[in-house]
Image (cartoon, rainbow, N blue to C red):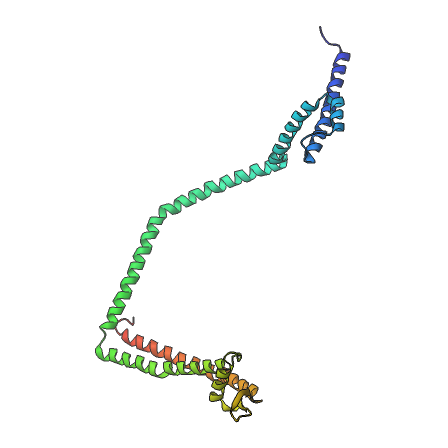
Length: 260
């Protein structure tokens, strides 16, 4: 029997009412889950009973369902989130394809690069060996002259550089803070090096009780530091430059057959 318009209207109203009632129940389920609860209160059970005729057992089932829904909603995200993720995945896939092709191309070239590198390194080693042999076979008088140049460099600027460095180190070490345990030893070192920096304090028995710095000590340290900065450091650098130049000249002499 065909339904009348009034029957269709009544059915539509019932469906709308059911949808509204379900959405209210759904919202209450979400609220309970959001609060971190897994069961409804007595008042909520009563409301569910009146709203959708759910007993306590059915409410537990629905809460479990809603908990699953909320979990997967968080993963699924919004439509915009999904569209962004899809775009990101497509872009990453495109990059992977292009980079895979590029890597494949490079891998195909690697054997050639490896061979070229090994041959070049082998050539460098051969040339270095040949250069050493040329040095050994340069004319004897040139080799002897180069040896004398190197010996003079060690005896002259190199020795002077080391002597100046030792002098600098000594002046700096003498200025280190005087400790308690080795005070007397340090004070005697300073006194031996610079008598005007330290004075003996005589005890009641006429022997040296201890040693103290004289008022001139601070001025002496300043004078030492000025000497280091203005005299010793420049002299060290000059000696180093002279030594390095002499070493280069000696090496150049030995390269008699390999100057080109």
